[in-house]
Image (cartoon, rainbow over all chains, first blue to last red; front, side, top):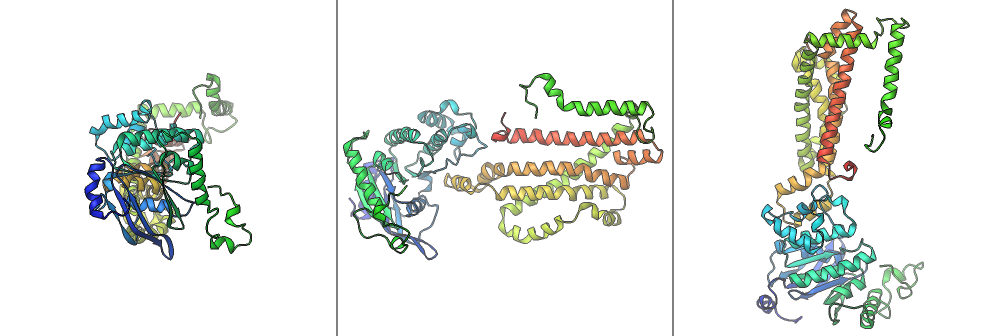
Amino acid sequence: MHNHPIETAAVAAPQLSDSGIALRLQTIAKHYGQRQVLHDINLEIKPGEFVAIVGRSGCGKSTLLRLVAGLEAYQAGAILYDGVAEDRRHDTRIMFQDSRLLPWKRVIDNVLLGLGPDAFPLAQSVLNEVGLADRAHDWPARLSGGQRQRVALARALAHQPRLLLLDEPLGALDALTRIEMHTLIERLWREHGFTALLVTHDVTEAVALADRIVLIDEGCITLNLPVPLPRPRERGKEFAALEEHVLRQVLKQNHYPQPLELTADPLWPPAGQVRWAI
Amino acid sequence: MASPSLPRWQRLTPWLPPLALLILWQVLAQTGFISVRILPSPASVAQAAWELTLSGELPYHVLVSTQRALLGFAIGGGAGLLLGLATGSFRQLETLLDTSLQMLRNIPPLALIPLVILWFGIDEGAKLFIVSIGVFFPLYLNTFHGIRSVDPGLIEMAKSYGLSRWALYREVILPGALSSILVGVRFSLGLMWVLLIVAETISANAGIGYMTMNAREFLRTDVVLVGILVYALLGKLADLIARALERFWLRWHPAYQS
């Protein structure tokens, strides 16, 4: 699948899924001034696939998401949506780490953002899907962090996106709320059939949700690993083994020599001896 | 702020000091301890206020002053709001105008009085000009600041959700700037009365300032006090209106939720 020519992907897309976008990133490069953030990124995502991008902070994973979202420009390469290089902003919605709800709009009006008033029943039904129908007329300030993210999810879904981008949406939530959100996101993804691209620093989250885990390190993809576990996923032995495997890759344990900036600084122990708080 | 859960006597507590002062004042005036010419008793001030109201003199002057204040506020505040929106929204306009406006801001409006008299004489125009200039800057500065401090994350989100330019302005930028704009409104309303008082005492043939200056000529200290109290009441009223606006428009804000 990875080496299919573009034309095949474009033709194949509607057969696979009507509701998800096929995404293809070709030799993407991005730099801010002299600093190279991403280089030679090649990635193919099937319609309706759930892909998690993991990596340390500052590895360029969020930047990649912003490029796909069309929020930032890249210097080289191409991003093809359903095989064509044109912008698909109207089909794409993002969930940010902070909910970014408009505090001066009630919950239901936040969900209606960018939609006409005739979308009211739809907004109500997506709020119902995230379990917040009874909070429709509350101000966002009255909600908990987890509830705000559920409203943000409902707001994204109200646009019936074919591509949902999740930029560490659960990063600020507590562990229990996260697990609830995992279940919710997985269920909605299966029901709606959109393509999902999740950026996270939480390897457990990636293993719990994704069909495939992509690791970005220093601007390059260093791992592209399918997750063969059946859904709904239970946290058993296989889960733990996979998690351990990905985590080792992220931490570069038993891997190639330590990165330059670490060996250059005598205060830092070699990366292999450090457990990073990522 | 008194909360409704407090018992009644506790809600009345803030009113005790002024009440005590009023009683003390009445006693001192009645016993002749202070001269009536310096400070007439509260009862005679109330008497004067009542007479002035009955004769229609007080309502007339209050009406004239209020009209001046509101017209000046509308002109100066409106201009400040529009210009603040413009420079806040367009970088080029900011570059062009902001430095000049920041320079002008440092001139106290009352310093312009001699110039204003030369330009407008002692007509209505002079008073309106002073009030307008004074209320312009608080509204301009706070509007500009409000627009600039709207969370860029919200703007990015709204753009990515397909909001057009105008919708973005209406749904995100204006509401985001509103709390700051309302701070400007409150400042302006306070300044509005201060400037009007000064402008009216310089030269006028109607208005509360005229009434008090006229009373001074006839040594009617009670009428002067009536004028001062009316200014205080009007200032308080303006502040209450501004607060009510805040409570309505910012009802989403945790600070304004009871």
